[in-house]
Image (cartoon, rainbow, N blue to C red; front, top):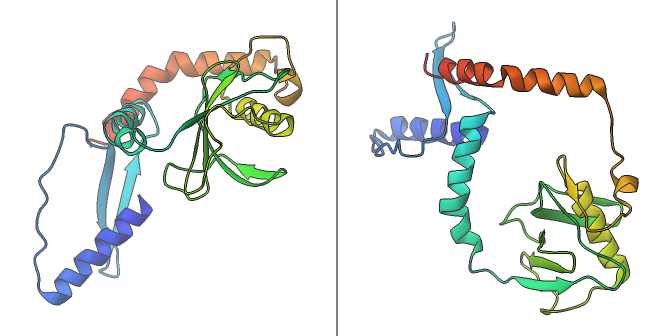
Length: 211
């Protein structure tokens, strides 16, 4: 949003200086991003452009539509492969199973990659033994490769770390050592209260964008 606003202001300023009128794009309300743009004049006569967006249900629905109509076209025909877990190791799955890994070394990595970020590894566990993999701008393993134990153990670790709330494993395992289970009546009550107020708060926030 920040970059879009800056680029838009720059193009407007350039068009004014050049005396050129920018074309008005055709509005598409079929899947509009739920955000609001405000232009305010400051006391020194200058203008200030601000954007506001609600991190909630409408943004989530928009992102799902965007993924299924745009992003899916980018990833459907890329080079994917399926690799196998070695004996004694299995792939769990989670409520957040698609991993876009930025790997620097064994002690430094993050999940902030994207479908177009160079050197990113994309993982998706398909079952206890099969793992879907794509390497961005680099060569992946040949299809059917049985990974070595250190690599498979690391991938198992990041699958567990990447979970939001739920991890599903076929056998009793080391999940609790990587992601300790938290039992908290306080957090339970806070979440229960959040869900009870969720619809009202979301409706009020969405209405504020229209005012």
